[in-house]
Length: 356
Image (tube, rainbow, N blue to C red):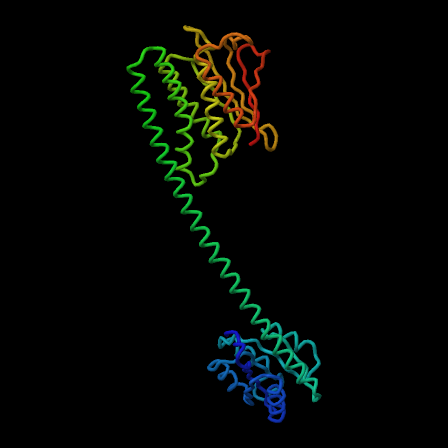
């Protein structure tokens, strides 16, 4: 059924075997703004409702050839989905309940008084209003669905663009890393060591972009997976350079936004690199431990430690150029954290705590 147009009178089919009452209903409803067609034969009425366009149907209960419940059942079986107002002269509640269960929109008790026409008119008006509201609800839901579909398409398109951007950035960083490696091959030992540190820093950032363009989530990364992969690369790099024996990594499942993850990766790279370079003077070899844990609902704690010779005393000149320390402090600042050094630890233990 389609919603009645506001510029035409609602068309009603009224089925009742009482010719006199049909005439009364037709006149009364037409005075109240309806266009009414009456039918005395219930089975013919079912055929008319299925073949023609009516906005609502009225059915009398007591009819000789078949009662209103049978007529109602036939209407629904014929695919008539217009609202149906059930009319009965009986005040038995079981008949009204049966009609409503069978699909009637409303029911009206038939009387000879004028208020019967008022009640019938009101029942039809309310049924048609409910149809109108249902159509508006369906239209609104369809509009919301279409808007969500468009939004999902936009989001997916943006995500695809971000993945492509991260892919290109990762490729560019890979090129930079290759160029640094080529430069290191022709440099002196001190410069070669500095360039290896640069390679590790580039790798820390490159790993983020690799994970972003291979992930469905382009706004955050699995920190445990990212730092774990970074530690593996550092392990291979240090093995080639003859550094520490093994880097151990422990982590809780933690997701971080990309900016925080980059800062965290650079900090881990600097701390592990420094530990492998300075904690165990050659030919001694030892372990480095990286621990990334949740420290409360929104807090993350990073600990990097070794059992080596410890950090330089306060006020003494840093080992190396001091660039690593400045990088760590800058990244810690971006994490809104500070570097904490455990002086009681036998080797070196550095801790950073920050908001996830």
